[in-house]
Image (cartoon, rainbow, N blue to C red; front, top):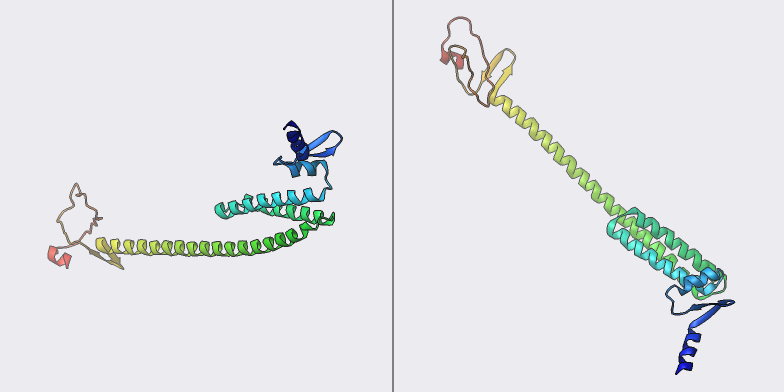
Length: 200
């Protein structure tokens, strides 16, 4: 039993250099192998796949949050993965060829998707701006109408004549003017004139 477990342990270990071994079961096996042997073609292939997977996660985060940092990380990661796959193929690891074609197709389709998403976002922003401008114009028209309406209900001045609404005439100027929401206008009249004639 002890010899079987030693055989399994020995089978799990890969010699890298004199006295240095890496375990195949290590989750960071390919990264450590590439660090120790920078020209190892299969390690390049597997590390490139891991980099591409992280880049895809950043793309999903960008699509969810619209944070440009994630998009930059995606572009950097996918380029690094593509370059590493190219190097792996250059070193003779032919399995990398299909992955290079897949990554290039992925980059092309993602660029199309992002272009469509940006156009849609710009269209939504443009619509929002138009709605905002329409609301502002409507408010300005409403304010102008209210100013015009208020001025016509208190008094209208046209050349030399003043029209007062509501019609109320007092004989003498009062010491205390009653509080109302209307602006009182005082007109001095020369001579004798009746209240009715003044109102008319």
